[in-house]
Length: 297
Image (cartoon, rainbow, N blue to C red):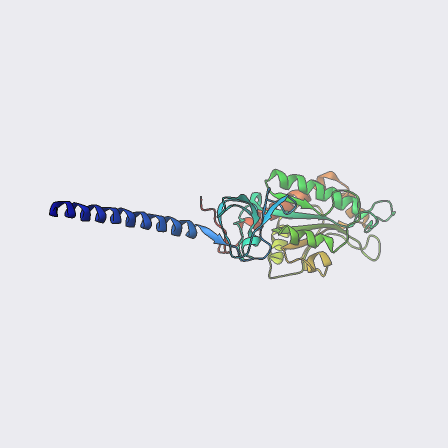
């Protein structure tokens, strides 16, 4: 009888020990899973089918819930929720301070702004037959093609001869959380044939715009026109833009000499090539100490 009681005690002890180990493993797994997740700290979090604010939204996510980041692309992350739901989220939807590492042009989101358009012709050539809006769209489309080949995600404020309000242009950069905003323009002087050259403008100095302007301008070489350097420009598309933004005045359209360059495909090709080089320089030199939503895999 005594032996039977001893066996029962040993069996009970063994069961309790196995139960304790099981509980410890379960709690350890839960803790590990919890630590692998990121808390959502914004009010606008949602799961999207694709990494784009223009994609279909599957569902909203509550502030305070947690997600596991599985991979990232541009400024988006692919996540898993506690309910085993999968989808894409903008990094800013998790925490406004989070961002994916963007140290290469292939990881960047770029907005290209073809100045003027539609009812707004922009500046005119000396004979009044050449319109600024035509050239800005030409240069913008060529840059778009080159940036896409480099792997960047590209948005256009316009891709045809249509009217786009000034306010909508920086709004697009804000909406997609662009890593850079490039606006194409062509200058005009008060008197025909009285000025020449190209200028790179910025407005904000503390959001990357000044360095973006310097990096792009440093690559604008051997164009045949004078480089007038980097300058402050109080333009709405720059002023109302919290994303790094520059405006390129790539020659004077009411200068017959400058227009001969502007309308030349080789000059257009050089300008757009140099802008790509400037963007590469900018992203490769970005601060890597920013708060990053790392890919845990």
